[in-house]
Length: 276
Image 1 (cartoon, rainbow, N blue to C red):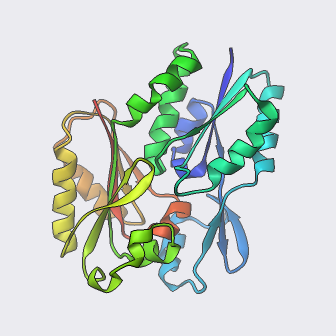
Image 2 (cartoon, rainbow, N blue to C red):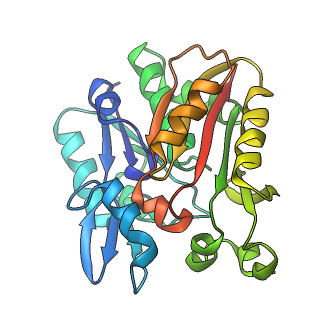
């Protein structure tokens, strides 16, 4: 059976990888001063992050409608695909999967909607894994059966430069409490079971970078690695160059999509690693 792979733009899959593996990426929506922008169009990531601290009112995000997903699924079936696997950002953090699930109702048994329980390359690596396994001739049923085991090997950790944006987003309940005690520290977060959890803090950015390095190097041999940042490319490059890690696949650098960055803020630094 021919299987199409669909995801959304929070996956942070490099364009070249999406083209090579024929992955369909549905853009999400950024709203700035009432103007809607499809993710990746109309405003660059560097420009967005430069403007973000001064944007008032703060920008908001939205998922593409279920109709967009319905039309995409229909187009893929018209191209000869027998089934679609549609895998998206954590349902606990985003409504994207609801739009995809609503669209899938018209194609029961042919569209399989998956909650990745992750974001950014924590999602993207799962999408790439599925596409690569399908390209090798493996059956979708078997791939999805093993996906939870693969997901357990994913580690996404990030250091925020400020708590202000995650607090402002309202997506993380604990971020609204005791804010005054946290303004002057660098907070670590981790994506676990689809949720954002606190993962400690440091008093300075330099100490935070050292701790991030210790966490990553402590994971052992890696299958894949991405260094995540929100417009902190120079620092991210230095961080990657300083690492002593063994990764089967060459690490990639990702300036995180604005759809996630609006909730994280500029100058965040982190990683997604898949252990062997």
